[in-house]
Image 1 (cartoon, rainbow, N blue to C red):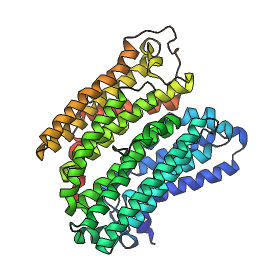
Image 2: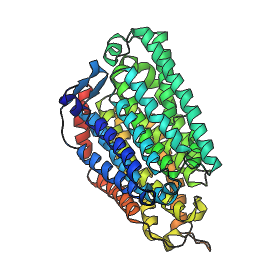
Image 3: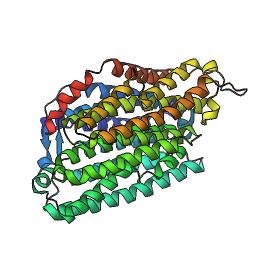
Length: 475
């Protein structure tokens, strides 16, 4: 490998360097100064996020196994922004709970290793690199889900995640083997040229799609989601809901729109049915939830159903709408999870009923949560409205009017249960309301970034045109 090769793998090399630096820092940092590891990790990852926006050449490595384009670089930067916000929101929890158990560096190593796997997965040029990246992205998160070892429910969460991930990985491998048997190659370009509609290719497509459906929490592959989110630390629940899901959606989009494009007549019907089921089941089950983590889990399932409206059309317009929606979703969901984390860390309360009267004691947190829920519901003028509007427009442009109608109907359902939380915070009173508390600097910074993102992306929608321009490279 020459220097240009390292430049093409800039995101991967920098993140690997950060992991190694943290290992060395752990060795030489005395026990009473372990909290400095948190500051170092946030600082280094902030630099990594900023460097990611520098322009570089685009190309491929390892005989086409690894490739990078403008759109892939942009999406890696989107993931970096999401992880940086998550680190800021998690810093207080790590300093107060995890560092005391002398497991701070391990948390960052596992988190960054998972992100490194996502980098390789979305830059993959064949199924071998894709699968290696997929496993590297999943296995560390299973350990993180069980990171609160003093809680039995956290251990259960890790076990459920690793078992469901193993089943999903096996299903994906089975599907890949079918596609290999049909084409005789694992390289995406070769499979695109050779794919033909046959029983073998259709079975491979269904199995592959089902396996990725587990990662995205599509119905009927969603059963693990609420239990894992409830038992995992809030930081990891938000990571699964936003970062992990976003990367899986992105790679599914690339593979369906390019590698499996010849089978579009098959997978568009499959997506149609799953989109309807995912939207309805995610929204209807969210109506019944009282725990905020389970509430946001079913909300994220419903949001995945909305993403499928952009996925079903299989063209450049669909690519732009999906990437734009995922970017907005990252800011919106991290804002909601950030407020939940701040309250849980101070009070241990995680139920919707506990939020009654929150505006009177903590107005700033209430406003952040309201903005996040309004964005997730798609209320103008916040960013979530434009994300859903572009998805509905894209689906309508290809004649999916009934699907758009069902999507709008589900937006109405989601508006109801999001407003239940808003009503509890602003209109209800409680004798045991959450007392006033002041969040620390890192948490305030993380929440501020999410609020700015929700508002700016709602006002500055021309960013969609920029993403649309980037997406031309995969066609």
